[in-house]
Image 1: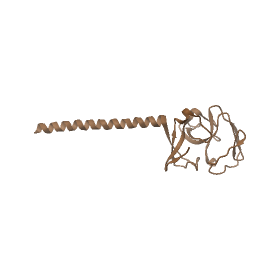
Image 2: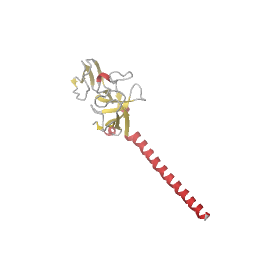
Image 3: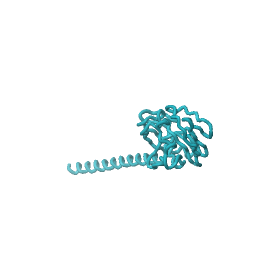
Image 4: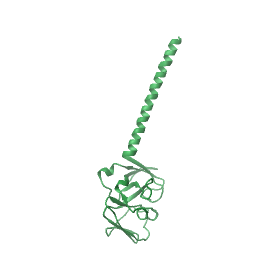
Length: 185
């Protein structure tokens, strides 16, 4: 009888090892898929400040697609995640305002692109009556601004450059997923 018990124990151990190995394969596959998605397909961003109010509120989280700009160029009005020019370890989320070759100027709190007033229905409130610019956007670069213009550290105030090079744009924001799901394009 002892022989049968030891045979059963050995077969149970083999089954346990096979099951453990199976779980390890599933977990490793899930980790590899997640790494692939977050490094090549999507980017997750946290919004720490009110610079994008009322479009995206502080404390919310968004998903951006890295693939979008492989096939298209950023357009005015796109909300993007990019490397902050003054500290590239930090990601920023802002709206594209000025495109390559355009002149952006702020007169009495209104944004003008090549002398034409920009209509902006997404702004939180009227911008303070300030004058900035003109900013001539270099080739392959973009001028960024937050939707809450009175509380946004954007292209108007950066120290190293007032522009974001296309290579520093990580992705186009597709949707907000926390605290609720909301499409942003």
